[in-house]
Length: 101
Image 1 (cartoon, helix red, strand yellow):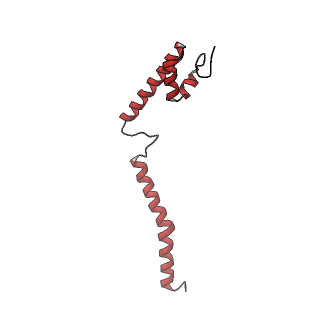
Image 2 (cartoon, rainbow, N blue to C red):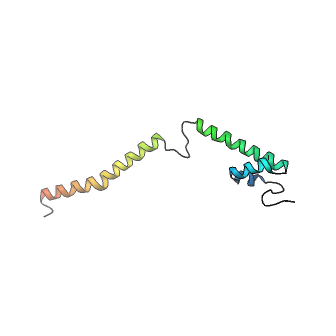
C-alpha cells in the first residue's frame, strides 16, 4: 500500500524533480528498496554535479564572460555617444553658428 509520503514506486521524473530534503527522507526511511536506491543515486549524482560545477573556473549558466562584458561596455559607450553626446554637440554647434537663436 502506497502513501503520499512513500509512493509504491518512484518514477524517474519524480526522483529528478524532488527536493533534496525529500530525497534524503526517501533514502533513509522509505520501506521500498527501489525507492531508497533511486533516491540515494540521485543524491549522489547531485553531489557530483555540484562538485564538478565548483571545479570549473567559469559556469556559463550563472556567470558573464569577459568577452560579453567587453562587448556590452562598447555597445553602451557607443549608444551614449549616439544618443547623448552627438545631440548635445549638434545643439551647441548650431547655437554657435546662429542657426538656433
